[in-house]
Length: 303
Image 1 (cartoon, rainbow, N blue to C red):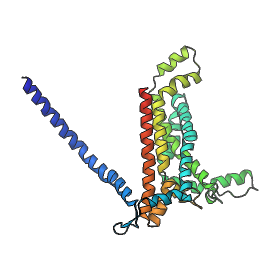
Image 2: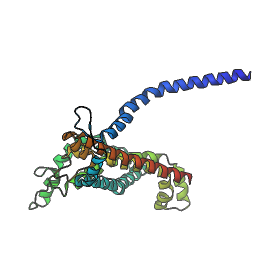
Image 3: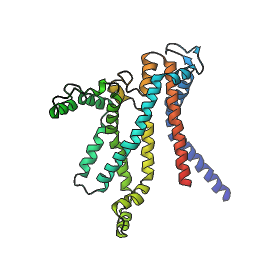
Image 4: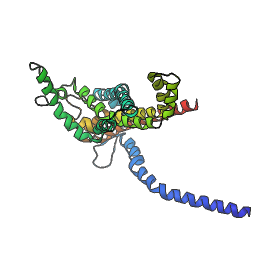
């Protein structure tokens, strides 16, 4: 009897294994072909001087990375990515959290309208958003200059996308405007998972709204906040479409990021070996952050 049970159990495990293999196998193959292999391929190409025509033969070792680190344009691009990360964390996420608390927990009659209104920019594609804001920033007939001329007719024409000193900050405003709605929606979903009974009990015990927010809402929302921080930082290093649609990182590389730098020096100049080295640097930065961030979170939960 025991042998029959054991044989039946092994047969069931075998069937479960083959079912999982059948379900996961195609996904694993697709992931390997389109993600894993290109990563190793880019790492291999980064060691060559290669224009994409024919097999790479001009081996350079780590010379591409040496040139990359010394390039002032790449340094500027990296600085811009870091600034996007900083402003995403200290401006975009706090705005999203504040609006989520007002819209998601408040008793607004038009709460559904405001959720849709704030989330709408994220629904728009990056290219459409870039073109739209190009019209808004347009020096002669754009919305901003029209408002400036209305209230101050003697003011000079403002061209934020045409000035290397202002183009990055103008695009940064658009980035915050476009993506804060996504994080707000995530926060609202997290707030809906917090039992209202906890807040009511705290208020009965005499806690103020600020104390309820600090000692109940934010601690219970910690996991959601950690997810949005992760998405925000990783996304800040990968942003491309919006910046490209608003001027390709120019003028004078005033809004250059690592991905626009990769596209210009890798594809437009047919230097795919050098471009692959940029891709490897971006991959290493994102992978390192992901591993460190997850280990810190795991250590915090275990502690």
